[in-house]
Length: 111
Image 1: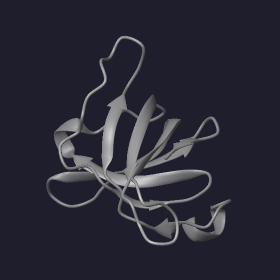
Image 2: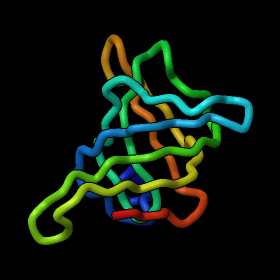
Image 3: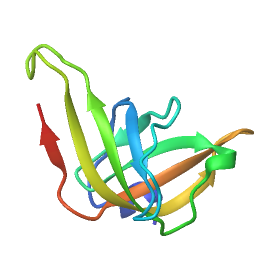
Image 4: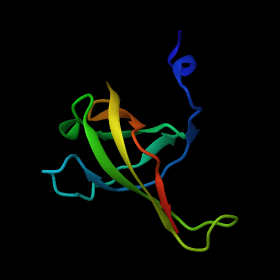
């Protein structure tokens, strides 16, 4: 079975900036430098991080994505906030790691 066939939800290629990550109750919120989603679905998302910042498998974390304003949905920007768990990491070049996560609770949208 291929990876694509195992997905419960189809992924949509979309590049949204990741504006905050919190890796746990003891970790402060941080604004990641230049982290962007590669794709997102109802159930999860995929993004790249620098190899030095690669998360452990099964890490639980909170995140925030910025939604820029756009014609047809909102004249102002918004945010997506949620909780996720790392399900897979994979090499994505010499200096980065791809991170696949599943959302563990419904997402909160704010406009």
